[in-house]
Image 1 (cartoon, rainbow, N blue to C red):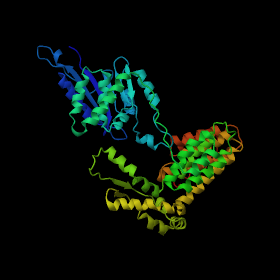
Image 2: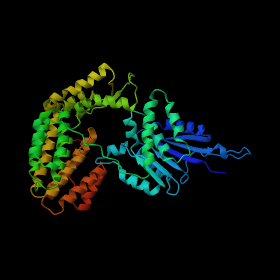
Image 3: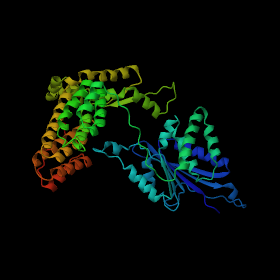
Length: 505
């Protein structure tokens, strides 16, 4: 007897792996194939990751004595014909399980990413290397088909399931006619037209592509700035840094106002003056421009509320849950502001006095408990909208004064270093990546930056100081407890300043 054909589909929650499985089952049965389908739920640090497994056997090859093949319930390493990953890291997980083998397996994967919690929580750039996954996939698979399946679905306003099915049909590893797939997708009711369009686009892509190709970079977005800011960027800053400056200015206009974006450019003028020449790679200006824009747009309670009530976020939530036009979606926001965050939103003197007073801290702590606010109710939405509206008074808050002092100290040290050691100044600028997020995450990052800044002052003028700062920054990114930084200091024979991890200072 022939052995069954086997297919494994790895999909995240909401990607419709069950729908693809039911469609494949219907297609196989319409072409007189026995089919068995099972699913095993798991966890992917994003949403539930489910592994679907199907085996197919042609009825025409059944023996006359009535025997039937015994089909497996789970994929076995080295014994899978087709592996389909609805997201790139899921392809990596399949390879880790040895489900992809060079003598047998065709691997179909979407090249888009849905980042894991560990990737998002990393102090630096914790993203998995997509190109490394694709290189390994090419090495381990018999045939690799890789493209952005999610983008095709979004382009046609369809569910990703239809685009996944189109990719499976396009590679033609299963012995089913393309029209059999189309008939199943076309029977899907009101969304059938969009799903069929996505199926056809994905089918065409998969049938033309047999090896991984780099995903095309998205077109550069056109950023519209006020004329005075645009003219200033073009007139006063190196051309290589101008795209970053436009992004930074646009971010800060959204965060606060045009005057705040102008202040951003003011601060960068002294940095741009430190570049060796107009023909240099302007590493320092670009590093500071990136870090300064992110730091000036620090996430206080006002910013968190502002982001939660933006129309773009509401639209994104509806798209994520695939809400139909006219349907009602209820959203509950989980909030737990810390004592420091509440006081940071108050006027500078009041917030400072409350933090310095035992009775004041006890009073404010009553408001720092966990809260759930339903932003799809009038009261809940207006509550966050009112908090977001406080941005007009943000410059007078305690948190704004604290962050301004920290930013000014960071920039002053970069300017001082840049006058005698350009590479050291660049490394100090790159350390901005340690200060991110809000709450305890922000406090720990700020403490690491203070420690590294103190070490940089001690190393000023010494050969190799830039490399030392780079090592310390990597250590701080790898371990937010501070243990890795202390070990690096010990290895380098440097003093260990107090980390001050408990408070952002």
